Length: 500
Image 1: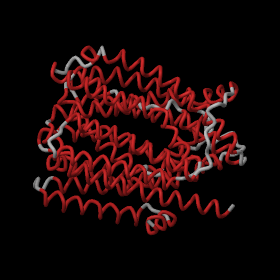
Image 2 (image 1 turned 45 degrees about the horizontal axis):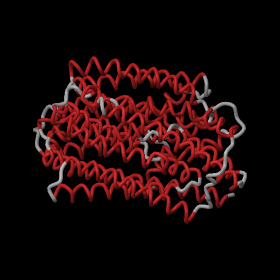
Image 3 (image 1 turned 90 degrees about the horizontal axis):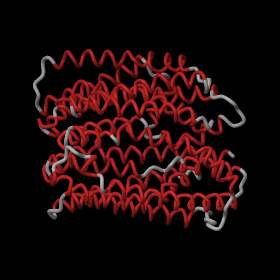
Image 4 (image 1 turned 90 degrees about the vertical axis):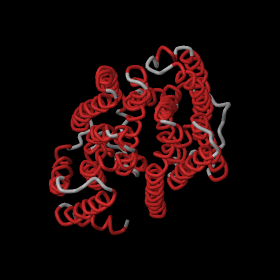
């Protein structure tokens, strides 16, 4: 038992390290590569590229079944029942084939309405986007049944393999994109690179699972009762997934309908920065489902999750706090030096989108508890309301303020969602969120506020140059770490950061 526990801990630690390597690669490549890519293909084509990548994310919805796969396989593994695992996966893959057929029909219908949906694109941009749409749609259809692979690797606690695949994927995309641009290829090649890289990663995961895991999918298996159980869990997880993705991934489409490709490009840069902030502070979130499930075994509420939620949340809060405060102070200069004056509004957009994450990211353990306790139906209703509000707010605000209006909409709906979900954590899961707020947000806030105040004062006396940006940024990071270490971190957290 101890050996199994140690193996899980090592998998989480190594998985976290690889996650941060992948994040570091994404950030460095983004800093160096994105401006060059935009220069090579043009701002408007970059807007179309952003629109295309958002569409890939919308279509690659796992319908909550990936989470069901992880949950059910973990349960069968606990009983050492490999036959059940094989039968279950056979049922799931047949289900995905049926879903794929429905999606093909939807995508064909949508293709003929592209000029109407994206009315603010020029005729030339519409023709380009049609080709991009065909590429992304084909990739989505082929890859959809394989989104369960992540659930399989998670349930067997193969976090290192999972995160290595993410790292390899990022390296592959970056390398192939650079080669394509150097050879003179532009928008279509970039979209193709994403699709081909995604398919290669699927092949790698399939090879690993076939070789190293005791899985032999039984495609002949059929069980109506089990299918009903899967649907009972996954239907609401599906709704949550779809609605959550609508918050960000539908926004480029809304901008395409009311503002145009340039505003999509600005939003794309801001969304990239928000994404970096989120993954930096929450790289280990997906690895805690098995641990939370064990804590909740034979329990009807989540009160015992609070110590883990506080431990993880304080660390995540300290990381995203530095990111947010640092971005307030040096973000405007960073974007100007990175992307140029055409993207100056991306600073304000990114600030609006990152702000709710300062409070949302540290609560990811509570989000995992929702899944572990099978309360996804409640979460789904909240996400539906928030997604609808975002579409309404974004459609209006984007019409008047472009990308800034879209970012403001996201900020507002995320704050609304945060408030509602905290009520659910307290009332339904019985997690003492007031204790969490006191131990995390309040006790960890002084270093952030002091750093922010000093940084804003410094901003009044510094010039907008690369050296000023580097010196100021370094000073802010050191000041924050010193204040955090001496004012807020406890012994456990100091030991954690020393070991890292």
